Length: 227
Image 1 (cartoon, rainbow, N blue to C red):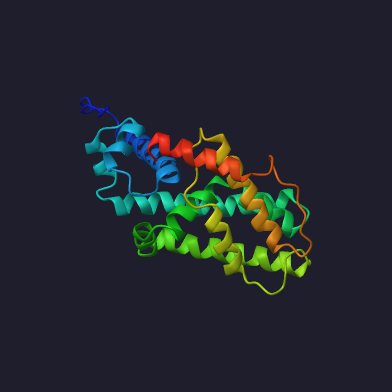
Image 2: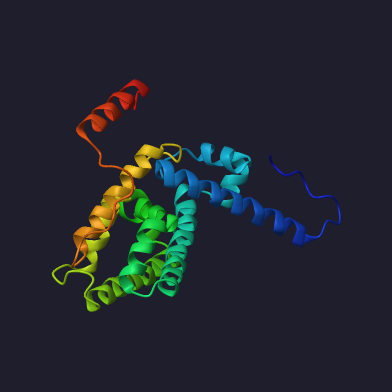
C-alpha cells in the first residue's frame, strides 16, 4: 500500500529507508516476473506483486527502461558472484562451468534480459552500470570457457560465443515453477548441450528418457489448458 505522509518532525532517514524498501520490493518482484514471463509484463502487475501502489512504482522507476536497467544490473552482478562461487567450489573450470549454467538463477534471468529480449537489451546497453557490469560478466564467462578448453574438458573448435548461444537456447523461456515435468526436460536438454561441448561426453542425465508418447501427452495437456 501507498505510504502516508510523514508526521511533522519525522527523521529524513526513515523516509529514505522506506523508499529504499519500496525500491527493493519492486526490483525483487520484477526479477521474479521477468524470469517467468519475460520483460513485457504490465507495470501494474509488478506493482501488485511488490505490494506497492502504481504511483510508488512510477516514482521509483518513471519508465520500464529504468526498471529493466536496475534488474539487469542486479542479475549481471549475480552472475559474477555465482561464477566466483562456482570457481571456488569446483576443482576444475569444467566443473565451475557446469555448476554455473545448471544452478544460477541469475544466469537464467540474464538470458531473458540480454539474449532474448530486444527491448530489455536496448535499455541495458544504453545505461552505464548494467552495460559495464555486462562487459565484466561476459569477460569472466569467456575466461571460464577458455580455462575449460585449456584443461582439455571442452572441445577446441568452438568459442565462448558458441557456448553462450547454446546455453541461451536451453535457458530461454522456461516452464512455470510448478511445472515439474517441464523443468526436468529443460534440465535434461541442458546436460545434453553440455555433453556436446565436452571432449569426452557421458554425463548421467536426470530423470527418464522422454518418449514420443510423453511428448504427445504433453502437447494434449497444453492444448487443453489453452497454452
